[in-house]
Image (cartoon, rainbow, N blue to C red):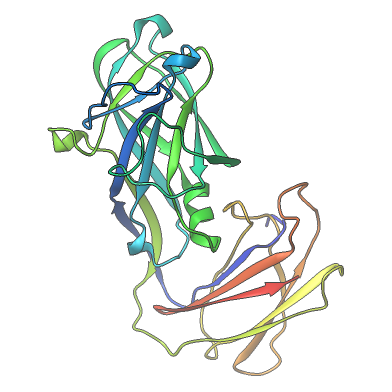
Amino acid sequence: MKKTILFLCFLFVMSLTAEEIQIPVIDDMYTDCVVGGGAHLQTDLFVNCESAPAEEQIMLNFDFSALNGLPVESAILHLHRYFACGAGGGTTVSTLYIITEPWTEETWDEHTFVQYQSENAIAFTFSGPTGAQDTWYEIDMTEMVNFWMLVNQPCYGLVIVADTGYPHSKFNSKEAVNTDFHPYLMVTRETGTEPDLPKPVISLSNYPNPFNPTTTITFSIEPNELYELVIFNLKGKKSALSPITESPIHPSTKLFGMVRTQRVKNVLPERIFIKLIQVGRNWQRARCFF
């Protein structure tokens, strides 16, 4: 079993099944830096950086209310490209960044670039035929979505920025006439099939901390229940530090010790974590410090 720095702990006390949820795009548009430029077509999403004056970026935001703040097993963004510039051989190298300021397609100036953070970025290359086409792309956004779910900050969506020198890729927006070509995000998560159980009791204590080789997290569940403990780091990755001991001290109480066997540089300097315990369809979240 892998071992890493901890961020989020899940306790599942139920049989689990996979559930797919289509997350809608609530805002999408493309922007440029041409002051006083013409109006953009709402049906299109353009990304390119063939030259600085012509640079265009795609902005997308989503409605995550169906996820209830819980992380997912996978999250795949689906984008439909209908045209690629021949000058680039059908290739647009780009990066997806997390937007850090509020915006909507109705209020944002389409000739102003949005602010974004460099952390949790996703590199992606749109490649394929040139000219008019019917090409779907699938972009793995699992870590980015889990970052939004785990970190207590607003979600303003993402921006797609082309690398310098790469020409147009043109995509359909959610306003495209053909609804079959609208962008969407498909997530997969595990759900329980057992009836609801009483809410678990979470102990906020974790000891010893913060610089010892082991840390113990306590929680209470019904005797003889099945469980699965899943751990995430701050970037939304399933981490490599896992529970290594189980020490029952009471029929309804279990203790887990976790060993910090390696430290991933620059991954989680804050040492602040979130414990989330799920029993049946009930769950609780709590911050703690290791």
